[in-house]
Image 1 (cartoon, rainbow, N blue to C red):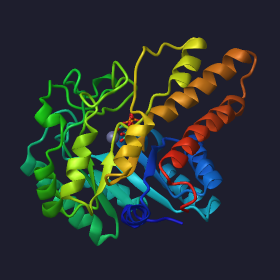
Image 2 (image 1 turned 120 degrees about the vertical axis):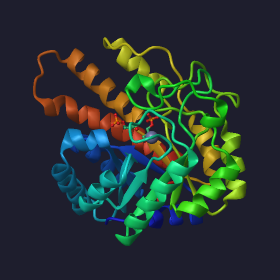
Image 3 (image 1 turned 45 degrees about the vertical axis):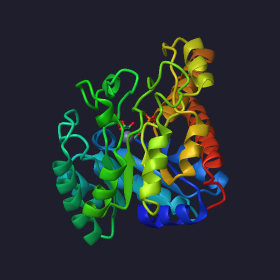
Image 4 (image 1 turned 120 degrees about the horizontal axis):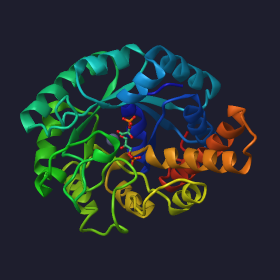
Amino acid sequence: AMITLRQLLDHAAEQGYAVPAFNINNMEQGLAVMQAAQATESPVILQASRGARAYANDAVLAGLIAGFARAFPDIPVCMHLDHGNGLPTCATAIQNGFTSVMMDGSLMADGTTPADYAYNRDITARVVEMAHACGVSVEGELGVLGSLETGMGDQEDGHGATEKLSHDQLLTDPAEAERFVAETGVDALAVAMGTSHGAYKFTRKPDGDILAMQVIEDIHRRLPNTHLVMHGSSSVPEDLQQIINSYGGDIKPTWGVPVEEIQRGIKSGVRKVNIDTDNRLAMTAAIRRTLTTNPAEFDPRKYLKPAMELMSEVCKQRFEAFGTAGQA
Ligand code: G3H
Ligand code: 13P
Ligand code: ZN
């Protein structure tokens, strides 16, 4: 059944777990998530970015969502817009059956220029007013995602800030977070603490200097009832990097967010954990391996099925690690 983000995260907060939010762009990724949710009896957040909507077509995505809800009737599903950049995008997501939207006002609508507080507050408050009138939840974001090692945003995958950012911009200020939640009425708040989107988050296994989990603890102390969201939360598993590289791929040495750090966040109010890259790596690893091992194969189902299976394994591991398993 379809459920809002607020309903899902209120339950997660009561029970002390978090829900992974997996990005999907097509049927295979959606099925992989749903099969993992079913196998582990987990509620789930499926999220589509603006890029996913352009890739898959809104009407097709809406049909997929409805199909997943019918095919997996026992699994609570929240359908969420990832990184909305304005009122119209959020409105059309709602028209297409999304039960939750993110208004990311940490950047201007161009997706690269850091926004000031007043812009972020005003646009987010307007989206909250519109979405709540439709019974839809809203996630806001305060602080700009990017690397504390380099000060750079998510440039390698084509979105995120393009100017060099200060630590003030890259770390959400707890006092400002308190004010932002009060002034906007968001249902969940994404915060910045040193993660970034994509595969290249850290040049070494992160410690407190480059992954500032203490910021989340400080925010949670001021906002104990606010559901916090971690973006850029892929762990970038070394075994998946190795499979890709041993079958002709070229992933440079890199580190993601260790699952233990996310678990630490879950003890401090993190209730939604965004994961896209790990699933991209899993599908790519399986497809490279299958096609290399069976060069005569040309039926897409023969390589997409192993891709779904490996992606499902990653999703199951996250459901187990975040305490989501058994909560459906
Ligand atoms: O925002 C980051 C997500 O990984 C979605 O990426 O915009 O390439 O679909 P995308
Ligand atoms: P990753 O690139 O770490 O998977 O992050 C995804 C994300 O934050 C989507 O909003
Ligand atoms: Zn994100």
